[in-house]
Length: 182
Picture 1: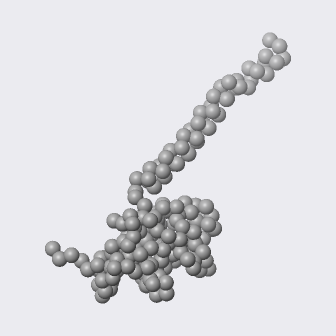
Picture 2 (picture 1 turned 90 degrees about the vertical axis):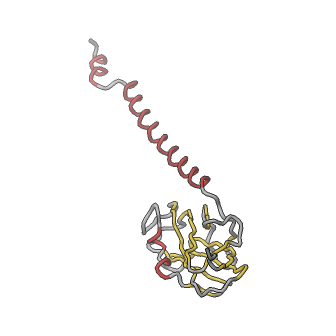
Picture 3 (picture 1 turned 90 degrees about the horizontal axis):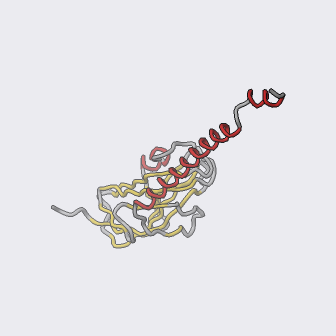
C-alpha cells in the first residue's frame, strides 16, 4: 500500500461526506420552504381588509390586516361587543414593549384598557421583539354600549414602542350599530 493509500483509508470518503452535508443542507432548505409556504397559506387563507396608511403618523402599514367580518370599510361594529383585528407586521427595530392606540375622528384617543398592552396579545412571539421579526397580533377594541349609532367614523389604530415611536398605523372607517334584537 502506498503512503497515500493509507491516508485515504484513514479519512472518510469525500463522496460520503458530501452526501451527508447535502442531506443536511436539503433539510434546512426544505424547512425554510415549509415556513414560507405556511406564512403564504396563512396570509392568503384569511381575507384582507382594505385600509389606508395614516396621514399624520409615520408608522408603516402592516403586512396583513383583517378586521373581522369586514373587507371594505366602513366596517360594522356592534355596541357592547369587541372589534377583532388580526394583524401581521414586521417589527422595524428591536422593541421591549408596545402600546396600541385607537384614535377616533383624528383627535379623540379611545381607552383600550387592558387591550392597549400589545405584547399581551401577540400570537407567535413575546416581548421583547427583534428587528425584522414578523409578528402576529390580535387587536381588540370594546365598543361601549353607550356609543351612539353612526354611519361613518374615521378611526386610526396604531402601535407604538416604549419611546412612543410608531411601529405601524392604519386608517379606516367604522359604522357603529346597535345589536339586533332576536
